[in-house]
Image (cartoon, rainbow, N blue to C red):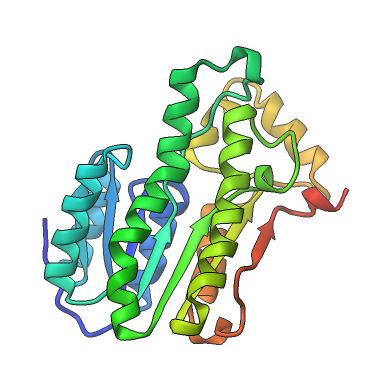
Length: 252
């Protein structure tokens, strides 16, 4: 663990060890921000970021399904950072596209706790400090599954719809106090979470690309760029929005 001491904006990024969260961490660090990342377990990518940005990147293992772990992580970050300017709730899991009759209560709870409850708990830990400084930006990771059916199974689709509703209400309740909350709705993004689609002859990945008007998958870095814009002062008048980045998937 390395403590961050730079003077840039301070950001928390969940799911920072892979996929979109890792791309966000890299991009924000490249722009000189101080980043506190968390994920289930440190890996080679995290160690590489710690080595490259020893003064501006800090990482903690944190199981976001565990309320006490979230509380401990939040207290540690606030003690070190003093303030948090940006909160990117990016961590999430899939549900294997299981319809409701194939979804167990345990799987439902796991998806909801990881994708939605963790966002609620971490936001409630960090939001008071943002309100005290009368400034803060929250970017939540939704999905096209939060806008249409077919992007996941019963649990995942319900969770992503919940994230969109939560984000809108969050911004509505606190915008007048200096808080800005938006969410991103990615479509087909090449991440480890979707690695199974690219195995063997990559038939699933090719089919998804054919069904996407842009005829391709996106890279995590493209979502990170959108995240950075939404977190910036340039997006100051964007409130409670859901921004699709899906190659045209939901226009069909």
